[in-house]
Image (cartoon, rainbow, N blue to C red):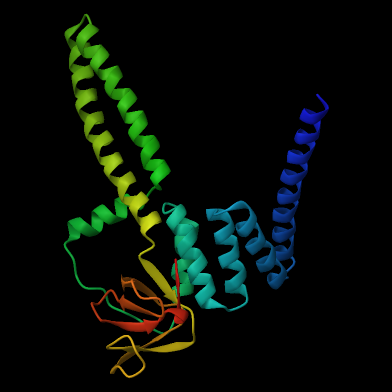
Amino acid sequence: MKKIVLIWLMVASINSLFGQTKEQADSAYVNNDFAKAIELYENILANEGESADIYYNLGNSYYKMDKIAQAVLNYERALLLNPGDGDIRFNLELAQSKTVDKVTPMSEVFFITWIRSLTNTMSEKGWGNTGIIAFILILAGLSLYFFGKKIILKKIGFVLAIVCLIVCVIANMFASTQRDKAMNHSHAIIMVPSITVKSTPNEGGTELFILHEGRKVMMKDNSMKEWKEIELEDGNAGWVPASAIEII
């Protein structure tokens, strides 16, 4: 019995310590001590793991200190965990507006853009829960269809089952897409003030163009240790030192 009580007290103490750290970080932010807030939020991430809220608060702290690259990085990480959060997306766009590089994405079919936007309205967990609810409603619809005594109930059950089947399939597809995005880590942020993109993975390569801090890039080739091939939304690609970027 004493061992159980001791373990419970240890767990309670740890939870209290983490909660206190979060409160301290929030308090430091409110009191404009952004450097302290950053330190505390970073500690929370290191000790407790990833959290969209903590990444968001950390991004806000970096933004207040005018560290745009770090702000963009943490907003992107927060959005990766909670893509449907409007506040995160708004602050990310605000931080991106302060970056130097303005890239025009290649045009794409409207339908693809719409699908991507719809997918990003919820996280993997959100779409997964939607799929589960839709599956339960499928069973309810089939029950009405097979066991309903009135024609109208059978029709309602049939339509409900068909609609929810479609929703269930789409929700699972979107959940899979969000899971792949979270696991693949295929994008990165330029973290240095400026970097010259090379045509080959060495300093002797031809200089192609210059990127500045805060620019989001896609990882085209992540196989080398010291150099990474990156690509922009407009199709321009090249090599940069691995030390110049940080993966989202």
